[in-house]
Image 1 (cartoon, rainbow, N blue to C red):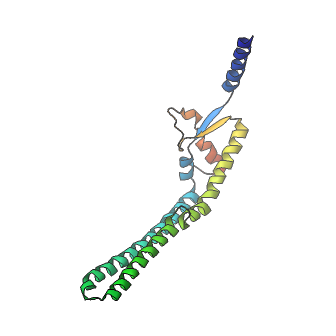
Image 2: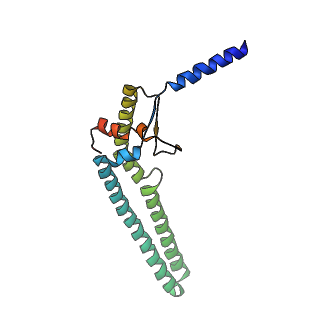
Image 3: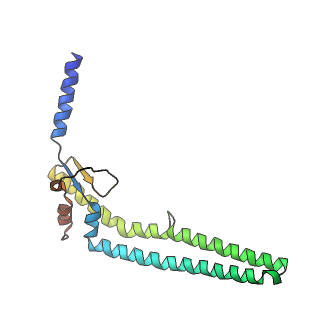
Length: 170
C-alpha cells in the first residue's frame, strides 16, 4: 500500500513539473540595449576615473615627500625627522581613507551605482515578472548570472520580449 502511494505521489509531482513552462533571459543583453544604462555606466566610469586620478595624485605627493625626506634625512634633527615621518604616514592614511571612501564596499562609487543602476534593474525585474505572469511561466532563469546553464534552447530566450515590454529596440 505504501508503494502505491509513493508511486502515485511521484507521478503527481512528475506530471505537474512537466506542465511547467521554463524560459530564460540574459539580463546583461537587456541592459546593454537600454540607453539609460549606457549613460549611467558612462557616468560611473567618468566618476571612477576622476576619483582614481585624485587618489593617484595623493600617492604621487606622498612619493615626492618621501624622496625629499630620504634626501634631507641626514641633515635633519631627530625631531624634524619624526615630524616629516609623521606627515608622510598621515598623508598615506588620508590617501587610503580616500580610496576606501570612494571605492570601498560602502563607498561613493557603490552608492552612485545603486542610485543610477538599481532603478533600471528594478524596471527589468518588474517586466520579467509581468511577462512570466502573462505567459504563465513557472521559472525564468537569468543566463548572465552565476547560474550554470549547460544548454539553452534559443527558443526559450525571452530577452527580446522583455526589451519589447520595456519599450526598447534591440
